[in-house]
Image (cartoon, rainbow, N blue to C red; front, side, top):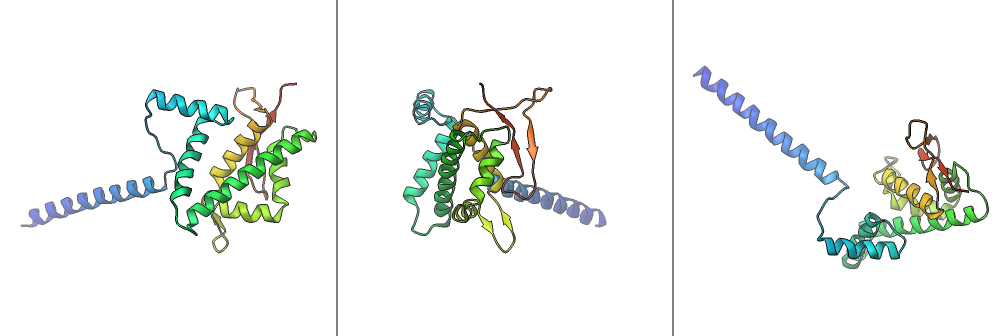
Length: 192
């Protein structure tokens, strides 16, 4: 009889471990931000052409198409829709600012930091930015900051026709900063 109880305990432990694995996987999937799916080649080609026409990368364009659907079908005062609208306003403002600062001759290897520091001086921009990243003033946490900042860095670079500086090892050179809206960024260069 003791043997049977041991077997049952091991089986229960095994089931509990499996249930725990399923729960952790489910939680990871809920937090995932990347989605992979296949498109028919003609559909992909059409979207790629539309993206090129708008001067966008395919991934960013597809993201915008999906977000447009969400915005078109969301209820009034939907917090997710508000965050997406804020994110778009941040992106538009940042790209326009980058192009303006570049036209003023302010481009250097730290251009991403220059743009973000300049944008952060504007209180209205920071209110919209905090909405876009889902900033919680009580916890001082923002679940969307890293992803948005990475996207802003890429768009700043692209908007002024810059490329990342490469190290001797062939990797992209990055800088770290503290006390700024961004904590790291790619060092940039432009062809003369």
